[in-house]
Image 1: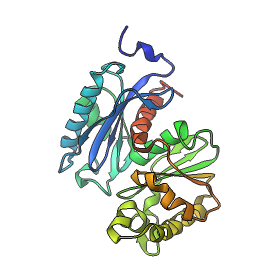
Image 2: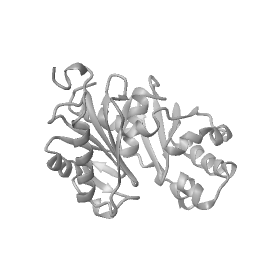
Image 3: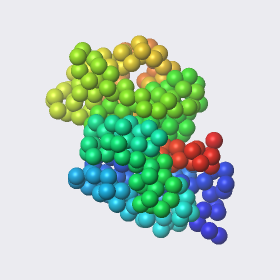
Length: 267
């Protein structure tokens, strides 16, 4: 039996890689249930995080995952997340990573390095796809906004299960400032805010987004979602707001789902 025969044609196993500012992690994803096959594999993000250095780390991660039982075929496409605006595989904005990425065709760069098709997606968009398919937003119709609180504020705009890509809601201007400069998880730490004080910032942000889009559901992701009980109960919104379920695996899962959908391996 080949490595991937046991996955079946309808729900293949795919590799997803999540590029972050401090770490690059990957895993083999069972697309039937959105769970990882085995442990994820992580390597610290190289500094400086240039395209060439990062592509080498991505290659190391994919090589490791391909050596495992249950891995997809050697030429199977790979999904990769990136913390920036991605349009047709090209990085258009990189607010919190090395500026040398701007204008780079990441799809082409990684496809050549890995010698297989690669599809790159914004990291928050990937997390959003994963949450509405397998997590907190499963079976929710209408507009679902997945907001990730971390170094900045990432966002995914999902309507009836379909992604509207590159909704950069962290860069909305509030009170003369970029919203993420005041309401991200890093901003809370930088400014030494208590959870009560931070909740005031989040209330201002989520109320504004709610007014603009009237979503059916807010899902809050990022590492700070582990402490959701410290701030979500303090928020007063019409819209239900709940923590993400997939936590740190959301990017990996969403990247694998995106590339599988692109190649019509799953619906």
